[in-house]
Every structure is written in C-alpha cells, then in structure tokens.
Image 1 (tube, helix red, strand yellow):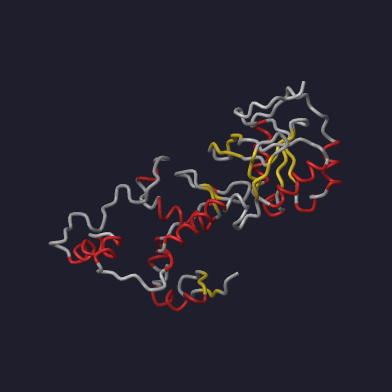
Image 2: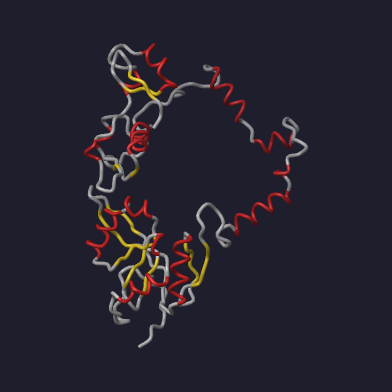
Amino acid sequence: MRPSKICPSCNQTVSNSGFDRHVKACDGKGTFWSKSKFHVEESWKQLDGNYSCPCCRYLGTKQALAAHYSKNHHNPELTKTANYRNGMIGLTPWNSGLTAETNETVKKASIRTGKTLKHLYATGQLKMPEKAIFKTDAFRKKMQDLANNRFEKGQGTAKGAWVFDSFGTKCYLGSSYEIEVARILTSLQVKWLRPEFVWYTDDLNFKRKYFPDLYLPAYNLYLDPKNSFLLLRHARKLQLVKEQNQLQLEVITEHQLSTEYIRELLTRYKQASWAVIGPCIRSAENRALPS
C-alpha cells in the first residue's frame, strides 16, 4: 500500500508524494480534481471482484474502471445510452473553427504535418542518423521474419506453443499449464482437441464469450488449467458457464498438474458415446469419428 497522510482540512487520504500540492489546493471540501473525478459505485461490483461499466461492456478493477469511465463517459447526458463509446461525442474540439491563418498553434501543426517524414528524408530536410539500422532493408527483413515466426515458436510473455491435437489439427496452446495437460493426456492415450468458445450471460446481463482450453470427446469433458489466483478471480464466471451451458468442466490448478491426478479425474467421468459432442467443438473440423 502506498504511504499516505490525512488532509487536516477535508480528512481525505492523500499519498505522500501529492500531499503538499493537495493541502495548498484544498478548500476544506477537497481539491477541484478530487471533487470532480469519478467515483466507482459498489453496486457495479460483480461476484468475481471485478467492476462492470454501466454504459458499455468494459470489465476491470475498480481503479481501471474509474479511469475508463472518466475518459469515455464523462458527459452525464451521453451516459444514458448503452451505445455511447467515445468520450468526444457531443463535445467541441479545441481547434473547431480555427485555421492556420487565425491561430498560431494550428499554423505550426499544419507546417509540421504538411509533409510526410518520407518526403522530408527524400528532399534532405531531415537527415538519417548514421546508425539508424532500422531504416535498412536487411533490418526490416529481420524484424518481419521475427514477427512471422513469433507465435510459431511460442515466444512472448505467455509460454505457449503451436502443437497438433489428437486428431492432427494444428492449434495454439497459450500457457505452459495447457501444454503440460495436453502432454499428460497424450501419454494416457486420451484424445483431446482445442474447442471453440461458448456464450454466457454475466450478472449484469451482458453476453460474453468463454474459451475452454481443452475438450475430451470420449468423456464429454472440458478442462481449464489455471493458477490459483485466476481460479479465485474467475470462480463466478466458471459457475455461470457451467450452469448456462450444462457443461462438464473441470479446472486444473498448478498443484494438480500430474499424471496421477488427471488419471484419477478421468475415472470420475463415465466415457460418453462418440455421438455426444460438446456444444463448442469446431463445426468445420469434420473429423471421422470412430463408430
């Protein structure tokens, strides 16, 4: 928690870094900013701990929602419609009616943006730094190859990778947990695939998508590997998904990533008929299922 102090005039909690500025600007009821900034209502809080915007489908933490609402829905008249998305709708731009002849700021901007950088470099008005390797064709080709192969190699912050499911279809597993569960299933000779999303309706009646990670056709069972933090955060969402779609869904945490646990889990589910296919299998896959 950030170090803070209590303002002696308005009794608000202020961070140490902004305390002196707040005291100078405080009129006993707070500063102009503290009185005008948006405060998130607790009635917008969902059971999973997130807050949902009443004007659009934005979902986030309390602090993130306050910033989102202040930026995009600050006009009270426009917040009455759920289709309101842009914070500038209904407002007058600062440069409305101004021209380069009547306003110095507009004039400078028109001169600066009147010609593209490519034109300025070509005419010599701007000179390329000697070590600007980002402008060479070789460097551009290198960056292009890296971008094209990034997901193929499973690079990035998420430790995912492209793999083939049990039916020979190439799919992307987005985390090391998903890869480990797929490896264990393959070692147990259990067929799995990457399913499509399912729809569900949250507590504020917004229609949302849920993406299961793995589907086992022989068991009509969906698996969703998650860490303990996401398990708590998404508990309400998982409950709604299972209730509204009648899914057999099991969450596997980091403490359950073992062959023994998954083998025991599968024994709880009686193998379903191959004719029983979950609602979110890709309709275009057209695999030849055994009789």
